[in-house]
Image 1 (cartoon, rainbow, N blue to C red):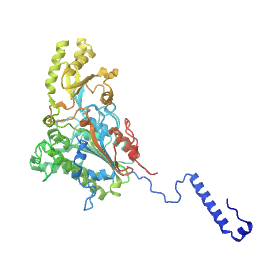
Image 2 (image 1 turned 135 degrees about the vertical axis):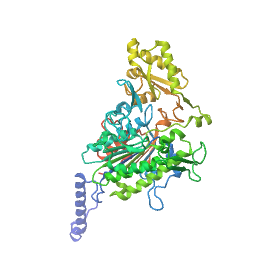
Image 3 (image 1 turned 135 degrees about the horizontal axis):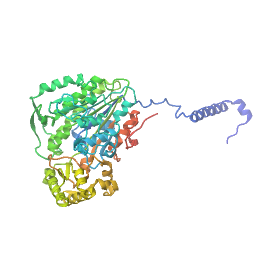
Length: 563
């Protein structure tokens, strides 16, 4: 320690004064820190501002590898003229998970959209497959069927509502905040629009292919009439019916598709169902999106709004072409350009531009390569005639238990879910478990199946181990899943389409996920993400509760919010 004489200090007081001043500054800083201030030397950064619009985009049958394969063909994140890009803009600004997962036994449209909206797997949300057998009615039950809610302008159509969906959706929870939020759901497919929209949507609209117009059900229309702002779009559609629609590949396109021709030129007729299997389906969906943005002024008011959009053309075309065809590559690039147009519109019209928007892009399921493509490349794959198989199984049950009373032993089949004739089993005094066990034995003897399990196996937890057990327990819903469910070998599928999706294998369950907007940390993430994690993460960012049956986690590694 340095010592100074009193005489020196009396003649040189400045060091002592400076030391005292320094001590006072340090004491002041220490007091400030003690009181909870983190940094008194720098101005406080502005806190997190929740967005005014949630834009939740689902591309139906969007395989995880599409964005990876076609990335070099996508629009740049920021174009030379200053416009925003599409997928790459989101990938550049947000959190991109190339390989997110629907951890279910059977990946398809109804369960996929229900899981995305509710944050709960089918065993909780009640939608295990697209269509099951209703034992009370004695007939098939479509996942959004509700005979009490008629479809407007579509004579003879079954009613539609979210009656069969258990629990709330993220849109319902946004409405429950009570701040006047508007929630709109749009898709060509009714099950996509209804299951995303949930119970509290201000509008849930889908496309009726028979009448070639947009519609909704009485459940969403208080006055039992189609909203007036939808009428101009339907008038345009009616004028377009019968007109030719030409879709041709770009010169030099399709560098990443190795099945079929490397170019195409197709002419479709508008008004026919097949015309939706093209960019025209994206076009009319985006026209409805634009109209909804205008009518409800979504994102432009001092409130949180939500717009759910499911683009269906990837699925309707993908079933016919498979994921290795030139048409699918071109359709993905068309989707990219339409998203770019949407983002630029929002950037121009919202008060804070895209900073006011939380964007989600994902898929409801993937799809298998076509068996024709796989077989040509020495991969074991094949189609299965589900109706012929049902007849063989029925004959086997008759041989074992005799003729059933009033029908067949198998009342209904849906995507390898087998629903038994319970009244006949009861009348004959046969053990239900015995019938299930015989049916299981016959299924696993078929060369096309790997495993089979029954409702009783689920009750007793006598299930295959590992991932099989987890996917079964995530998916099985008593009374809506089959009494017996068969699990096919990889790349074995029913012959309803050239290719399809109906399994828990990676090609059906793996989808991309992009989250972009305020509070999200940009990056490409290799973390394990399940789609049930999306709704809780959105709830955290939007200051709402998660849907009431949600079981996922907040993706904390992707979120950073300054206080």
